[in-house]
Figure 1: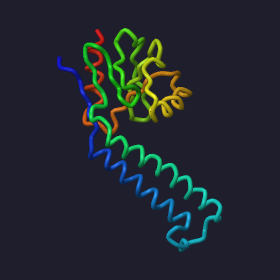
Figure 2 (figure 1 turned 30 degrees about the horizontal axis):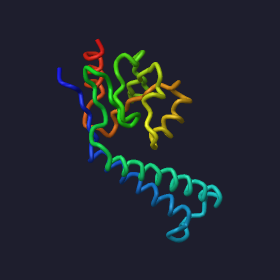
Figure 3 (figure 1 turned 90 degrees about the vertical axis):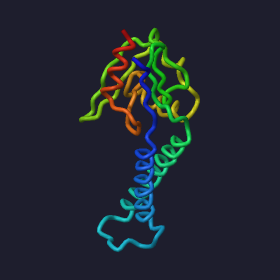
Figure 4 (figure 1 turned 60 degrees about the horizontal axis):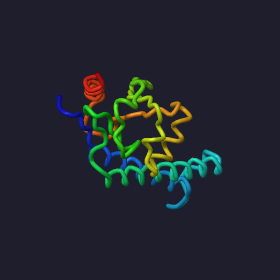
Length: 166
């Protein structure tokens, strides 16, 4: 079997960026950057809070997705040596370091979860470290692999992991 490679999908990532821009514009409108809102049904403080939260959150997400477009195209590689998941680490995680592979499901969305002997060995010092540290609270230091925004399917990735891990 050939190595499994999932590359970022420029179209899907661009759609995420455009969605973020739309929510930033809505947030700015709620703040009042484009003038007063035509309706004053909600309390002013509530509208301002929602506007600021939307602007800051979706602005940050939009910048993050835009930076992601500029990085390496290859996001996930699974081969006989191990797993390379670029959003987590620039280093390949060898099969000997992977204790367990699980599937995490939230609604109908699935992640591949890798439990590692020592996750700190495979971190890089970038924004991924910030996100991963926050995620550790919920994931017990596991590596969550999402194929959102890539050109490959979840089932193909699981098949490759099962094939190469044995």
